[in-house]
Image (cartoon, rainbow, N blue to C red):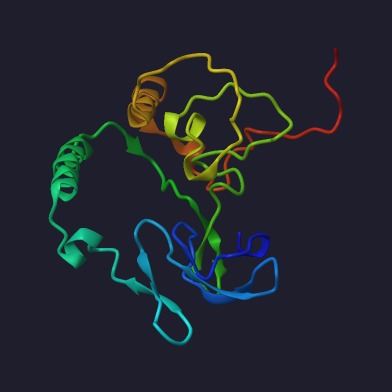
Length: 209
């Protein structure tokens, strides 16, 4: 974003999956600080604008064991609503719906990034939790309104797609129904390979008419 814009003096990146604090150049070549804030409330970015001198940026961070409202002592209607919702979710999470005969992972079991440690496979390649998307193929997709209809997290791949079913079922319930109904409550050894099972195969030749 910085390299394609002008008029921005500082950029606080709120969902970057990194914590880099760097200086970048904008479209006119002007230096702009970028404060990356990680993901899932890993940190909060700040920008100090002085009366004189240059502005500075940085982040406040804490261990992921503590929530941001607890760290900053935030008590309001929203925090109370979150507490109520989390209590309801915690009760649902106590319900056992299936048994996994192996670890289900989103990380590469072997690769290690020298800076960040674990290397995420999900969203980049097939895993035993999901597959990549071929932009040239046609799919019928079931998912959440957040991703499919509202372009959540900037995912615009489904913009303009035909809506076949209004749905109305929570995504967690869809997964639960599949595991209990289709898999019989056991996530079997066919899901043991973290790299997936080659469910999607890309071929070069054109399908027969």
